[in-house]
Amino acid sequence: MKLIRGLHCLLFATALAVAGCGKLNHRYEADYSYEILKKSADGTVTVGEKGRVERATTGDGGGAGGIATRVRSLSATAATIEVTLPGNKTTTLDLQPKKTLEEFPAGSEYGIRMTVNDIRTP
Image 1: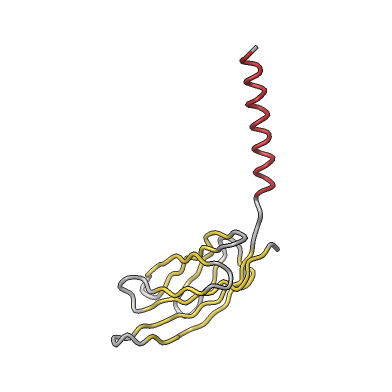
Image 2: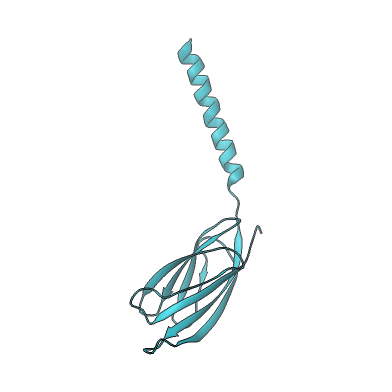
């Protein structure tokens, strides 16, 4: 009797989890802009190429001027974007909407300045 009750509970919990997980799978898209930065020997930073990617979803990317970007994950409040710079230096940025991050990977004269302009559901 306990076994049958336990089996029913397990079956109900599994059905509930499957149904619940399907509803939580939101799809988001983001607009972001970036600037390629170059640091000279004296520490001066200059802006090179600029770019903008619109309506990017997880897995989408863009790039110009020797860089590539790829959206690794999106939520309602954050985006994780992987950036490959000249010289194959890669960095990952965790960004919130309307916040700008600037990063130079270790040992690289190139860096990135990136802003997520908007995250929304399509």
